[in-house]
Length: 256
Image (cartoon, rainbow, N blue to C red; front, side, top):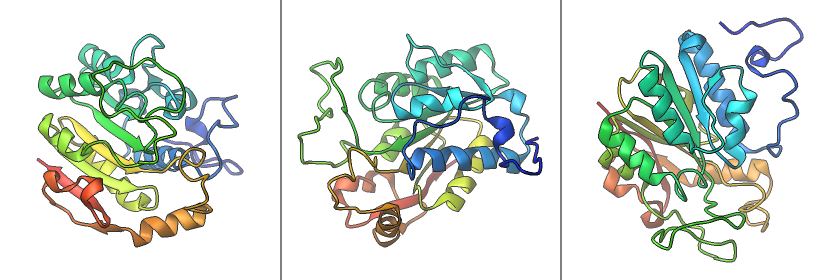
């Protein structure tokens, strides 16, 4: 249970002392997703002792550091591999993985595919901010989806929900940081799902995606999400490539 003491924020009891202030920019979608996740844990009355959070590098890599929940963040391992290892050693624990482009698209895709093939029970929350390389890093020449900052094409390299389904995910959904109520419903469903669950959350980075002035202030980004998204539950995942959509299709696509 999350203690609600007068004069404190409802999720204060789940934040590590001394962890504030956060490194995330004001208005960053990561904070919105984490807050929604914590509120969902309270809503479903889950035993926090049986929840483990894994996060890797980059901005989402701090999620496990901030939350007063069991974590399995190893600096020499990526978030997915670490999560799989912890889950296999602790089968009764619900393991949640927070990912961004750096530790999923650019480096962790193989481990994600392998976890799906093995049928490992994980909840993957992928915060997609369309940033594949924000600094120099080592990538293999066989990684065609990596781009650099001077690339004007900010499109998604491939269809995340379809990849998740092909990897055997039993629950797949996509939302934006505007649709937090629906995101909460999906996290609730995913926590109760016995298999691999993947939730993609569209959240453009303030620093590297919106500083060109095209999306404007936070309220403008929320208006953009409102005007350029459409909910289609059950839409075939092969139709969810953002590059081919007039509007971003959101919803619950797989629920076995």
